[in-house]
Image 1 (cartoon, rainbow, N blue to C red):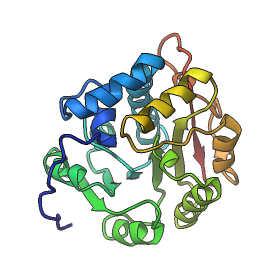
Image 2 (image 1 turned 45 degrees about the vertical axis):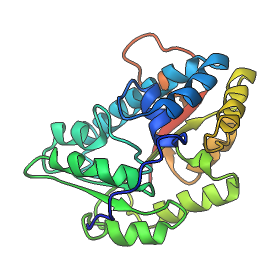
Image 3 (image 1 turned 180 degrees about the vertical axis):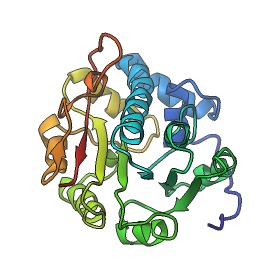
Image 4 (image 1 turned 90 degrees about the vertical axis):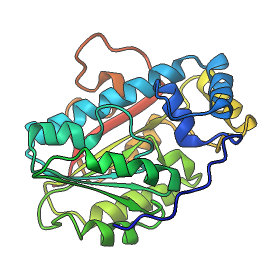
Length: 261
């Protein structure tokens, strides 16, 4: 895939991917990002835990799919800035031949993707597609250059669908993407939920401090995005409760892994 020209960095404007990177403990952020992140953390300190635990959920889900379900193809839509234990690293550690397609609409992420793809294994492939999840057909066309859609694919939407305010459009995006995959494919999806007043206030603070507004939804609304799929145990739960390796902590974030019958 060809890359666009190096984007001009606006270091004085909060940037969604960099704010999340800050909460995860990364170094790819600037003062404006940290200020917006701190404003959220003042009213909702659990946002840092959410960021870090979302990566742990990704690690557990991807490892299960690669090691237990035999999935060798991943389509990670809305990947954000790379940090630690990214999808390709987890999957290719289990099966080096695994192919991973990352999708993001942010030119800044594309710049970081150059180093990300250099970290791929010799046998597998890691490719980054510049596209917006509002255009599943474009994403699928690009993914077909790397992935075999006659074999199961794991589709991932990891904490990104709140950037679309219309739940009907969100459901359409997920449905159109999954419709292109064969039986045995999986959907991995989590998102923030409006389950406490503090997290709702945190989302308001983010928008007030220049961050891109993010829509928090109810667990039932997130659960509806898995319709027609078979949820893997333990079903739709807080992401800390999905096959935890220790005592799970409360989080306003729900997710699940489901199989296409």
